[in-house]
Length: 262
Image (cartoon, rainbow, N blue to C red; front, side):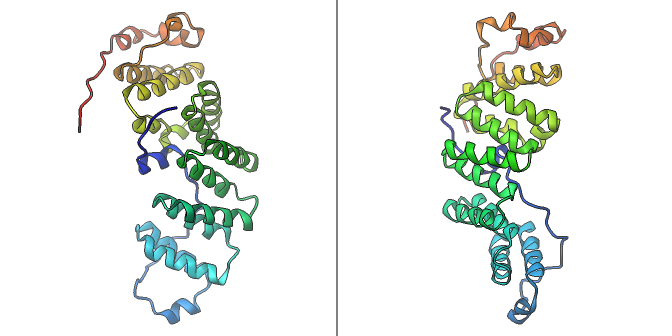
């Protein structure tokens, strides 16, 4: 198991949290009277919460989401938004309750099901995280959900399953890893060798997909982090196209970079 220090921003990028499209930006006024709040519809209150959340004013956002729920308790999308905010703030019990409420009111809400999986992943409850990711995929087969499952399998030292899930994700959406920064999992791995191991996993993945450019990039990263390829690397058919590339020799001469202490 990888020993890691979770940096929440990187971790959320690694495990893509999903939230429904939000309302267009409004001219939010923090000094709105309680009378206005009382007369506003649940949809308008939710929209105001969206504005404050976009401004990273989580206190006001939560206030308006909760007001919205008072008028429409069964709005699963609002529960999900509250859950995402709580998770980003590391308020795990609150996030779990919010996601479960979202699922309670919409059992087919794939984004909330996925986000509950992300919560379990952060808590290192990988069994429940895997279950939630698979449920989300059954509800809505998206690249982000497969990449989340791939990240989980990497974390639990199952590279074969990790590669398969990443492969599916990339075939569905070639830019999913860049957009979700899945490769960022290496940024919060416990040490350089962990980052190197992850980079080599990505090397194999892209080699299997015939993407030599990305394969070579990750191979160089692996070597820079001190990773030593397995003995059969020079004969493994997975890497045949990579070895034939004229840039391969230069990449293999990559020197391990010294660790800079912060």
